[in-house]
Image (cartoon, rainbow, N blue to C red; front, side, top):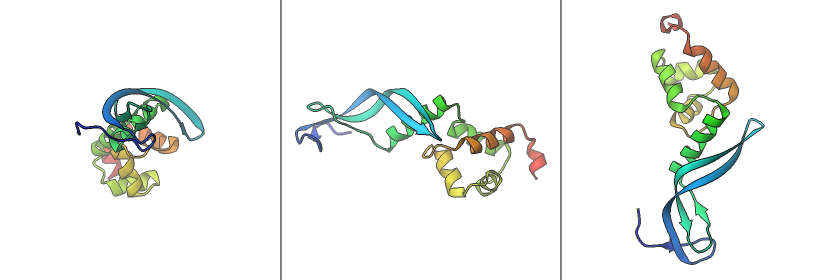
Length: 133
């Protein structure tokens, strides 16, 4: 982290510093809008104009809170189900009808899964691992 203020892209002053904030977010997932306040979010804030910049870490934290609010499985829960079933990414993606890239993004927390994918993963949760062999 830097210790000297950076130039603000909004107001032009050298007043941007890292800061931990509570950040309100409204996001729509499959035609349903969710509003959350993400607590203790690392951000970059201009002390002059209040402009806020977020990085990919903050984006993942925001998505995580939206996933919780939507009642979807968290990325590590999906990973855990796949691991319990001893399925390679390719096999799990094929079962879900999505690409391996999409499953990778979902498991990394870089993409929010659809409700239909979430339902299918939940159905796999109780399937005995040996029945998929």
